[in-house]
Structure formats: C-alpha cells, structure tokens
Length: 181
Image 1: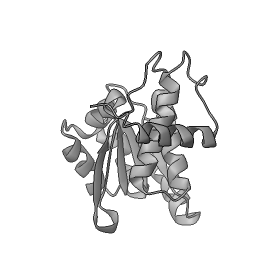
Image 2 (image 1 turned 180 degrees about the vertical axis):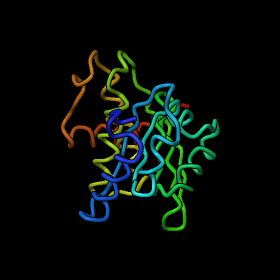
Image 3 (image 1 turned 90 degrees about the vertical axis):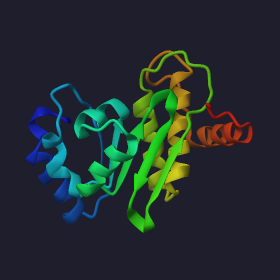
Image 4 (image 1 turned 30 degrees about the horizontal axis):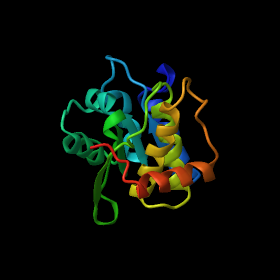
C-alpha cells in the first residue's frame, strides 16, 4: 500500500506514534495493486484522521462496491474521515464525527488535456483546506479545483498555481455553476 516495508503492523506503529505521541493529523493516500487487502492497512486505520483513496483502490481494500458501504467499512475500523477520489465523478467524503456528515462533490466541468497528477493534486488541495480549518465540503471543492488545474495541461506539475490563484478559480467555477452533471 505505501511501501512493502511499511505495510501492515509497521504502518500501524508509525501512525499510532504520530497521533498519540506527537498529536499529528494523519492521512494516507493509497497506492494499490491487485494484491491489496484490508490486512495491509487495518493496523493503521484506528490512527487515521483521513483515509484518501481512488474509488478503485477503496473497492479493492474494502471488498465493497457501494460508496457508503466502503466508507462504513473504513469508519468501522476507526478512520475519522473517508475521502474517495472519483476522477470525472468528483469526490465523496464521509465521517461520523460531530454528528456525521456525507457529501458527494461533482468535479468541475473543465477541458481535460492529461490526467497525470490529478489525484495527487486533489489530495494536496484537500489537505490544504483541512489545514486551513475549512469544513470538509469546502476542502473537497478546493481539492477538486487543484485537480482541475492539473488536468488542463500536459504533465503532472505544469498546472500548479498559487493558493490565491486556485482559490480565485474555485470561486469563479462556483459562481459560473461549472460542476459536471
């Protein structure tokens, strides 16, 4: 999932130490193959604030197809917030914290040149929003916006913009109603 030497118990020990000893906000963005299973991540799940994954990887790890069901599996294992990247389908976010919250946020309707780096860009944007103290929906929209800047150009990093430019783009896209149907 992360690195072969970190899968399983080592992942759990690292996340536990980060969470309990240092009070860190923890997250993982999975990188999966067909050999992936719940056993690979289970030891770390109780110490994760954010489990972030593509829909394909989330289905592989949980064995569930339905978004709500796969999120519930991860939440049942102690994850605080589940974030599923769905490419042109946007993102899905679910938590049981603070009375529970669930939202599916459509992707922005922008021209697509190259999807390389879009998922990583989403994660960077989403976690930026989290670190700024935004609510999950705003953080998800910002993640979608950073992902949209990535797909508009050829290459993984050529679409990177400043925080201010990206925030302005998000406001324009929201104002213009540019969400995919």
